[in-house]
Amino acid sequence: MARTASARTTTRKAVRPIAVGLVAVTAAIIGTLIYQSASSSATSPPRPGTAQPSLVTPRNGPLGAIAWPASGVSAAGISGIGVLPGPGASQPVPIASVAKVMTAYIILRDHPLGADEPGPPIVVQPGEAAVYPAQARNGDSLVPVTAGEQLTERQALEALLLPSADNMAWILARWDAGSQAAFTAQMNTTARRLGMTATHYTDPSGLSASTTSTAADQVRLGMAAMREPALAQIVALRSAVIPVAGVVRNTNTLLGQDGITGLKTGSDTAAGGCVLLAAWRQAWGHGTLIVAATFGQPGTMATMLPNALQSGHRLVLAAGRALAGQAHSTSAARKPESTRGPAATEPGQQQEAAGS
Image (cartoon, rainbow, N blue to C red; front, side, top):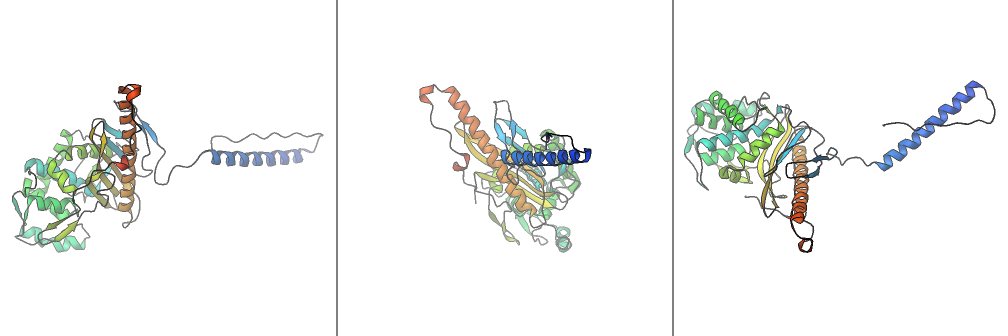
């Protein structure tokens, strides 16, 4: 409370000092209760799961208020506008399996795939298959593998990005760079090239809590990753078929909702619930990409990822509304008064279907 109402007491005649004190204290308490009641009725609390909206002013002009997730750290990005910092956007935190976006980005940079092209074969080494049982006992996120198994590059990336297989991150790192250490060095070099100055990768899977990044940095990566057609195509899949593992399903259950077409989820005890989402909106007559990141969402192991998905979904919607408002206001400002049309459609009503 900012202040309390002052109490004013009057008496017609002199009374003993103790009586005067009791009257003053009683009146002050009553005044305070009245002020509290008036204040609480005049100010409504923020919607559960969101912080108070904050204004964002990018270079194109005011974008409007965005309600950021109340927990963890968050940022958003809009193509043509840039990165929009939310609470803790520049604070390095563990990012769990969201780290696999960088792994996939480097694999496709080093081994580009055309549309629907399977890519070269990747052979699972005996040692990689032999450690699978121990990894499974540790509770790692995995896909079953056998010695000598062959996967195409595309299948390996599907196993990496959909069910979030840690062992596929390690196999891809070895295949690309010869070792996990050499590949991790590439991850950090690439991060600096993309302007991700507060990011530090220590493994290609994100399983290590020492792999840290910021919400703003991961938004930068998400914008770059979605410009890679094969990566954008894979993260939009709801399921895929992998040798030995069979059907695998995408942990991103938001695909197809409100234009969401990717990117990556993650969760563990160190990182909490994490999600990096990509969605498309129509603005200024063309498709505009929104990338939203929110990490460190609270909950149990069973609830932290659903909590992150819910917070990320709300953030995508909030950024979409702000974008629609700016696009409408700038378009209206450019038209003569007689030619201005009706208000912009709510962004949730303009969706692009995700791949499946």
